[in-house]
Structure formats: structure tokens, C-alpha cells
Amino acid sequence: MSWQSYIDDHLMADIEGNHLTSAAIIGHDGSVWAQSANFPQFKPDEITGIMNDFENPGSLAPTGLYLGGTKYMVIQGEAGAVIRGKKVLFLNPCLSPIFSRMHFFKSRSQSHILS
Image (cartoon, rainbow, N blue to C red; front, side):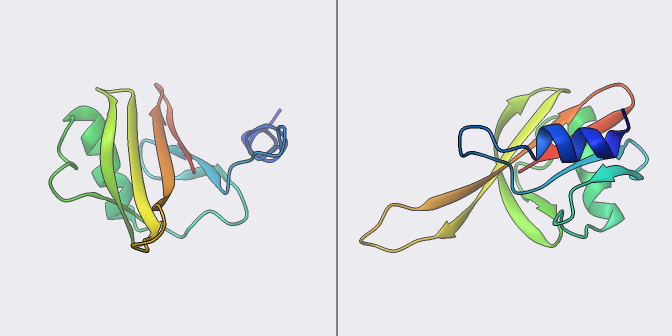
């Protein structure tokens, strides 16, 4: 199985009406191994910042995490393994905020980015 078929057939699969909006597998050097069709175009320095936070946990907390020019607030994680971020999509005083979540997972050879 290729990494692209893993993204297409497993990560983007609909499970009981729920599914990811986008996913990618990115090498530690920033090279894209596979990605969903709607994964945002990102800048190399955004991936560098994410990889740096895996090595130095908490480095993104003061400034936020950027992917595709969109800022995410770093909310929690597991040092060296997982970074979680979120952004407010809609805020109305009469309604509860709606959040978009982003999860970053690190393995020995690549990083998985899911939203």
C-alpha cells in the first residue's frame, strides 16, 4: 500500500458520518509523501516551526502554529510526539464557538497532519 492510498482509503474514509477534512504525511525535511486533495498549501517555514516544536515542546505556544497561512492556537500535546491546535471558525455572542482542530503526530521518519 502506498502512503497516498493510506490517506485516500483510510484517513479520509467516512466512519459513521464523520471524516477528516484533510490529511497529509510529510517527511521531517518538509517533503510531502502524500496528501488529500484539499490539504492547504503550506510554506516550508511552517513545517520547520512544527518540527522544531517536536524537538523543543512549547516553542509554538507563544506565537501559535501556522499551516497554509492559517493560525492555530496550540492547546496541548505530548512532548515530542503530538501537537494539537485549534482555531475558532465562527464566534457569535448568541452561539457557542465552533472550533476546527488540527493534530500533528510525529514518527521516526515522517509527520502526520490531520484536520
